[in-house]
Amino acid sequence: MSASAAVAEGRAVFADSFDTWRSAARDLLAHGIAPHQVQWTEVEGGGDLFAMAAPAGRGDAVEHATPGPPFQLQVSRALMELLQTAACCRVPDRWAFLYRVLWRWQHGEHDVASPADEDGARLTGMAKAVSREIHDMHAYVRFRERAPEAGPPRFVAWFEPQHDVLPQVAEHFRHRMGGATWMIATPAATVMWDGTTLHSTGPLLTGAAAIEDAGEALWLTYYRSIFNPARLNTQVMQGHIPSRFWKNLPEGAIVPAMVTEAANGARRTGQAQAVGQRKGRTVPVAPESAQPERDEPSTLDQCRRCDLWKNATQGVPGEGAKRARIMLVGEQPGDQEDIAGHPFVGPAGQLLERAIARAGLDRKKLYVTNAVKHFKWEPRGKRRMHKTPAQREVDACRYWLEGELASVRPQVVVALGSTALKAVLDNPGATLKESIGEPFMHDGRWVVATYHPSFALRVPDAEAREQAFDAIVVALERARQLGAP
Ligand code: URA
Image (tube, rainbow, N blue to C red):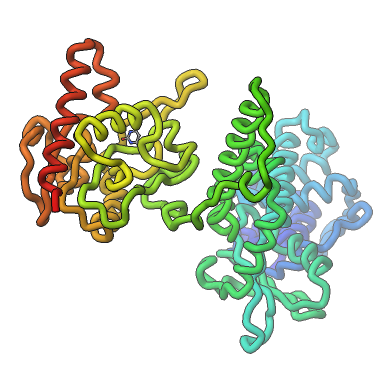
């Protein structure tokens, strides 16, 4: 039934693609049916996708499709292209709106094609949104290669477009992918290239996870190799790749780590340059001793149990004697520890060294670690100020402390401060006040709780600082006695 006949019977006019809309619109215009008389209804998933992609002709001679009064309308090519592009924009009233535009044009209102007109502005906006989506799909569709025995298509991609741009995108990839067979699946439709013809069907897959991932490792290797930390601008990157695309990009999983590595690299380079500019004697160093020996990167570097890794230079593992009888546990690495990669090397570490020596212990025979292995900080001017870790971060990091306790098997654990005590006892309610100075057994080993060395540095009054220092020394002496063979 023609569109005009449907209207005459008081029924809705159906459109499922630009082509069906265009032929209905011709018929309605030929019969002089005004936009307010037509009720347009969208047919989901119908129509031939590739009919929508057919290029608009050189000015469209609109003729009546059903017998009626002689009728011809010349629509400018520019307007027809705009209508065709805007038709891909998923707005609920798209067919009715496009018909209003066409109607106005036919009635001499050629301003309707101009962005200065209210309808023209909307039309242009819809076309722009569609062009953006096409561009995004060209940039962010990622094909995964399937196992050869799975048969065609060789490459499969999943994407969730916001507008109906699959046909245009399919044309693009038909040229780009040469003779390889491929399929792009979306929630609304699927297109397939069999090497000679494009086919379209309804939705076939239910998400990115349904796609076999044979090509993922290859893609990640490629992405890593083209990633240039020197040119990294995260703001631009995030601006260019909106977050809704990241979840379906295979590189989405590795980009945060690469960004952090790049930031750390930049920080180290900056520090090296600053040090290089300092005055001083130049001491020639043999190349083999210029590179300090480093351990292989530990799995701690890959830790993502909480978010602290994001802003830290590196994870700082515990260190010391592998079978130490006494283990000292602090809170978390500080600014200097974060850069050096070793625990207690900054001001708190120096105070601790003095207390260790005063207590008659030898640091080399101890094992020194922290409850939390990444530096938590907040910027204050140019400085990175220590921020106490949250309980969830302490809990997340207990995995590493437990590993250290299991491997070192110390007889005595000295908890330096309340975060350390909570972590050692695995008790968020534990307080220093309850256990300070009085060793007790926990999990088959002695626990001695005392102040954190930073407390003995920070406390404003000199006498209190001295008392705190003495208390740390006493705790270490108790540990020495309890850990004696
Ligand atoms: N404070 C800590 O708790 N640990 C360190 O390693 C340094 C400072």
